[in-house]
Amino acid sequence: METTPSSRIQSFAAAIPSSTSPSSSIFGLKRATRVPLTPRKFLPAKLSCHPKSRVNALMGSEDDRISSSSGPRATTISPVEEDSPLQALQYGSLSFTASKGTKDPNENDATVSIIVVGTSGDLAKKKIFPALFALFYEDCLPEVRKISSFFIRKSYAILGSGFSSLSSIYFVPGRSSDIFPCVFQHFTVYGYARSKMTDAEFRNMVSETLTCRIDKRVNCVEKIDQFLTRCFYHSGQYDSMQSFVELDKKMKHHEDGRFSNRLFYLSIPPNIFIDAVRCASMSASSGNGWTRVIVEKPFGRDSELSAALTKSLKLYLEEDQIFRIDHYLGKELVENLSVLRFSNLIFEPLWSRQYIRNVQMIFSEDFGTEGRGGYFDNYGIIRDIMQNHLLQILALFAMETPVSLDAEDIRNEKVKVLRSMRPLTLDDVVIGQYKSHTKGGMSFPAYTDDKTVPKGSLTPTFAAAALFIDNSRWDGVPFLMKAGKALHNKKAEIRVQFRHVPGNLYNRNLGTDLDRATNELVIRVQPDEAIYLKINNKVPGLGMRLDRSKLNLHYAARYSKEIPDAYERLLLDAIGGERRLFIRSDELDAAWTLFTPLLKELEEKKITPECYPYGSRGPVGAHYLAARYNVRWGDLGADQ
Image 1 (tube, rainbow, N blue to C red):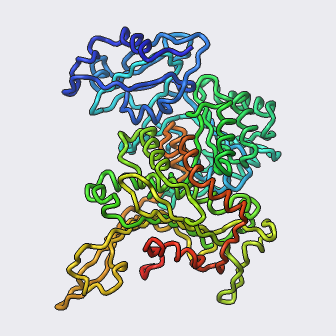
Image 2: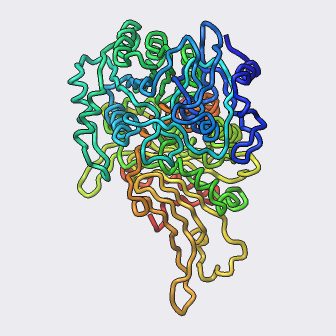
């Protein structure tokens, strides 16, 4: 039975001391700010009052649900032990605890179990286990201490009822400036796959994938050994309910009566997603905490299959339990995109069609399919890169200012951008496929030379597209995407080319090629992360000679700390319940709506891709596509 917001408020209002009434003055505030909460299905055990961003990070989001067979429970409010009631009120350190029917845990009673389903695959070995160890190495998983109180600029009166358990807030020493703290003192990692393997064999496999931070190698071997003691393996079929029942028993043994929170990472092919989710949901969900599932792309092949996948997932999971991961959203420079725009006054006024001539999203790899052709041939470069990675970056770049940094506010704005875009047609796209090439005495194979690729395949390994957003901010501005394999370099970047200076006094000094003289903002996502702005500048001397220079923020030179891998940030967000960098179902629907008509037309008409040599800059047609909109690809300039 779920309670209404008004009934929850009335239930809490009776329990709140008079000193916390809305008319109380706390730090000069005449009225406490209410954090709206809806009933939640899976939540941990205890909560200390904290700013809303941390509430959402620790509890999941406002979309989490609680199910209770006995209906809503009465909830009491008590100060945290370390503070007097007055201090607790002043510093916002009140804690909410279920009054009956629930064990009142101490700070060691919350645990998280991370289950990597498909543990023998490349993704788990190359990304997931190294990322989990990196979080452990940075003290983001174990050995954290609890904050009893901390100063907040606004007081939050959290009103609601029906909570069977809430999460404690924990703090890693030396990381007080983080957006949200690390959360759990106890964690366990489980590998799950069909392969037969002992715990010792599993730990040996995992250990071969682990490395320590370049800038922090103290106690590396000791840390690895500590991490491996928390790793266990369970062999089973992905569609076997009994196998997941046995996994559940193993997890309960290690959880040892604590409030259990479980994160399943589906590192498996999409055709077995539903079987694994069904078994995990019905046989291995947490009984008293949250259960979340990370789903890797691809999320279908088109609108119809994506909708069917979402519908099937929602038979066993709520939307707020599904974390659709796009690792590009976890890249440092992608996350910095909104900071660059919304926290610097010089950029936001320029972020429109009035000053921006075009925007380019460029992704290139200097290698081919390398034996992964069987998977890649079923999807192609458009589904693999453009429909998700590049489109997500475009939505973040072009969105309006969100109401707040809350996950739902940001994702709402992204959806508005996607729904404002024109569906792609054949005229908007150029596709290509790399062919064999010999350079410097070395021979490079063609795409169809890969033994895992069907002979005569027409799957594109390169695509360039022109997209348009039909709204008042971006009307008429071409957003050009380019993605390809077996190109001349490896790179991912955003290039913003500004308009020419009207009536420029220095045209004679700049020469006839005005495109070379235009201002350009470049955000290099990878490798060698950087943000730089190209400007025109006078060369020192008696004459008037102009030069093009860069105002360069080079991350390696500016910051000594190693940049975390994207999977580290996304795994930590999933554990904390922060959904800002994960894809919502309506985002996914809007993205597929843009690309599905084009993909169907390419396949139905069997459009032959233009060939380009392995290691080249791509097919010539991409240059004609850009020229149609009076644009020159920025990555082909002299500075490249």
